[in-house]
Image (cartoon, rainbow, N blue to C red; front, side):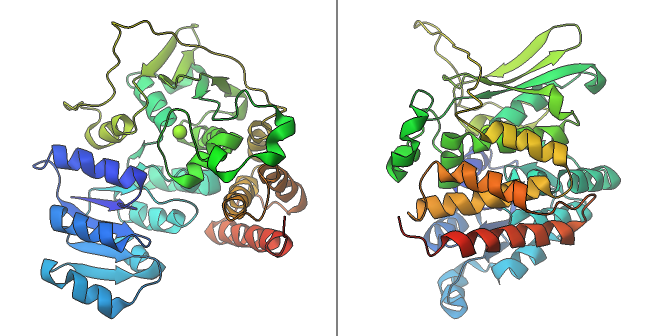
Length: 384
Ligand code: MG
């Protein structure tokens, strides 16, 4: 029995595509949405979950009436999500929530011995050490859905983790790979939202344009695979066909490849280590096809060094990095700041907030909240 948090988002709907392809393999316990109630209703009709959660603002009595004929238990708000998260009858949760909201829910699911398929990278960025310690205490599995980390996870099957020399995260470079950084202040929201290869949610698409997404993935990889920051490299690979690579101590490099389609890592997270027949990812090699690689421009995209800095600073620093980026992206999407200010805001936040070592959950949530408030106070009222 599985639950899908964020079932109406990009990862959530693609997860349900895989579930629909394998109707006998999965029973859905819980689906959640923030405010896409129309789609949740359609999903409820098709997949018949036992429970749904709506975390955004809504009229509960209206919702009860709308969902009545499906005989589904409805929960509301963040508390509803946390209640759903603590259900030990669920075998696996697909956490496809966006942003910091998924952290507490993930910890509750781990405590209830539920395996986690993780698309919500902020969970490991904010609290990687805490989460991974809890995962090993409880003996649950955490399987990445992020395409790069799924690639690394697949490359590491049957390997000895102590023989990893380094991991190499691939990055498409986003829409501004070849754009002059001097023009970054003029970047429009539409330009930043048009990713060359992947169709994704808004937050991760903007993060791909700033390479903040790769910064978050560096932090995610450090915790998922227990490697040091120095062992994590990034290479620009515009075709997004190699999803990441592991180099071992003997110099051998393993890579995982497919066309850029999130269905592929989602399917592996749900079926792995088995592989099930599915229509996605296959590349046509009858046509000429080449792959390119280049080192990232770390001056133009400060996000990579900021991520490494936050890992070296340790403690609450990655949570500060994450919160600052999340708020800055929202400010950019609402037209309150310009594109180049996103990384400036993250850098300022890392340099101006006190870092707490060995943080517990409360320390992390407090740091997260403080950073958000400080940035909003400073930029909310600004007019471009
Ligand atoms: Mg990724």
